[in-house]
Amino acid sequence: MRLYNTLTKREEELKLDKTVRIYVCGITAYDYSHIGHARSAVIFDTFRRYLEWKGHEVIYVQNFTDVDDKIVRRAVAENRTQKEVAEKFIAEYFKDMEALNVRKATYHPKVTEHISDIIQAVSELIKKGYAYEVGGENKDVYFHVPSFSHYGELSGMSLEELNRHRIEPDERKKDVKDFALWKAAKEEDIKAKAVFDSPWGLGRPGWHIECSVMAAKYLGIPFDIHGGGKDLIFPHHENERAQSYALHGIEPVRYWIHNDFVTIKGEKMSKSLGNIVKIRDVLQKYNGEVLRYFLLSAHYRSPIDYSEESIERAEKAYSALRNTLELIDMEIAAFKTFGGGEGAGELNDATSNLSANFISAMENDFNTPKAIASLHEFSTRTNKAVNKGLAGLEELENAFETFLSLCNVLGIFVDYQRVPVLSSELAELVKEREEARREKNFEKADRIREKLRERGYVLIDTPRGTRWKLV
Ligand SMILES: Nc1ncnc2c1ncn2[C@@H]1O[C@H](COP(=O)(O)OP(=O)(O)OP(=O)(O)O)[C@@H](O)[C@H]1O
Ligand SMILES: [Zn+2]
Image (cartoon, protein in one colour):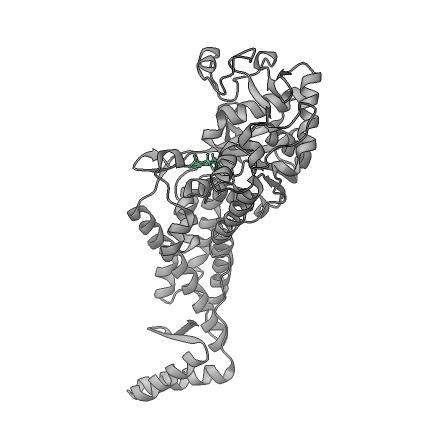
């Protein structure tokens, strides 16, 4: 599989062992999640599903930032604690993710549950000469950027550009680029109960150190893949790499993978711009799988623009795939109930093309829109073959299995309920009804239709005979 690596800035052949270790930055839990957050979650969940489908074991870690300025601000405004705010939005996040078929990670570590690991890492960075303390009773600790010679390589920023970014201004810093590993407690932090005891007094971790520490703890260093939205490349991932490299003395991550944004009228969806669409707002109107399909319908390294029209288009396309799945399944159930189904093998070619094209798209920088196009090509061909009565039982079963398993790789139709084979009693009724229709006894035909509906089946009349599905 080839993937674009942000660190080397080119596509590379992924070299993976049987076990693949992935870390993806999670949300800062201070508000409901929007569909920009959903994109990152869905893309990396799909990546995980694909690797598992290929036979890998995936250890997947996604953190929660549960202590941070924005959480503290909200807690103080609402007279609550940091923990209360974070716990609420973590629970809401899980609800949203469930609707999108985003599986739980192997581990979902939280910052507040790793304070002692973080303190240990910060102490070590000081000991190794990469970090320094400033201040009085409660101290700040900064990472000294000039002490790490590879700084800037991930984001590809020059020293000049880096010096222009005045993050965390503090005249006590030795260099403008230095960033916080540990932050001395402020009044607000104490109010929100967001402070911890440390060798530097009361305070809390800076943002970046959490990911270095939790990734190393759950995955070991180096690990295979680090993901996140592209807004995280700088400063978050640049700083994370610096910390981990300094701590472990080696390149900490083998492949850095970043997704582009969900935009709205061409602008990044973000809380600060006030143009967000919450996941749950979309779910009011659309099935979670439709939103998921929409998010996968663009290449992960291109922006995707959300609008009412674009999600509606996704819904139509999603339904077309679902209809084909059902069409195949109904045909299988009919053959299994009534016999017949010798086909000319017309579908076998469509199925093997589907497999080949889907895999080649995914292997080529995880091209989900191309993979989706291969599903639609298959769908068109299959609809034609089935409707013309050219598809036999064996080829249909083969087509069904392949099609569903590839859709499941994308995380759609994961709870698909098979169309059942009819019991001999119900099969007899269906035959009687066909007979009644031939005799133009529509009253009887309707009575039988009603009877089957009561038993949970909807009947569909086709030129090839009766088909049915679950109500
Ligand atoms: N519009 C977006 N499109 C795609 N991914 C996004 C978008 N906004 C955030 N992400 C990604 O979602 C994950 C969680 O982000 P985080 O909680 O830091 O966002 P945030 O800073 O609270 O969001 P916002 O940008 O709205 O303030 C990160 O991987 C981030 O890159
Ligand atoms: Zn992170």
